[in-house]
Length: 259
DNA sequence: ATGTCGTGTTAAACACGA
Image (cartoon, rainbow, N blue to C red; front, side, top):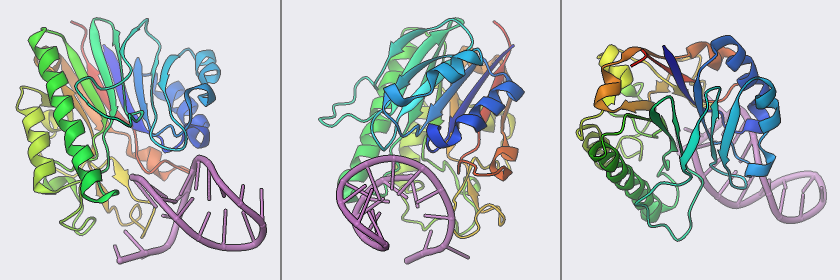
């Protein structure tokens, strides 16, 4: 059995102890982190190593930043999203191979800042991700693409009134791009096991979103076909949002059986 | 639209992103 998780921690320096406590409780094999908000050298790799996890970090100053923690041996396969022509590359993708599986960890652009240019960058990232997924499928690779997609795929993934209809997380073009990705033949792990219901992974800090349960399902794990056949469980760890000084996202946990 | 966070510049607020 293999346990793989994704968590937007909204600053690893603020959330280091949360992550250490969570690793000890949940003991995932792989954990993808997003929004670490620090340069690679500032990532607390040694603290995680002492907890039994080696890491690969793609950081940048102030914003974004992704990392993967692993208690399995791994090799880094890429530190940026292939197929993305970007004159100002941001730290939004890192990928490893472990236990015969490629694990891609992504932080997709939010798309609400920077006007039409910012939104276009979101769609460009999604197109590049689809091209990369297509290449992995063509190569017959078993893979999981997990992370903060910043996409509410359907109305059921957005609490009523949580977002205006023009928000970049649920615009029709955003949802269409997400469907194109899934329709390559990937499986949304949560929806495969829980076709309906509100399984939020994010609650805004503002406007009492958490106590009102005004959340969003925007963190996802997409599985290649053979991995989907091994899927045993998928769930967000809601409890994490109720702790002191939480991230606005909670971990998403996917469990698959051994091949 | 925003009641909150986090980072950073810069000197107690402000800008920006989410």
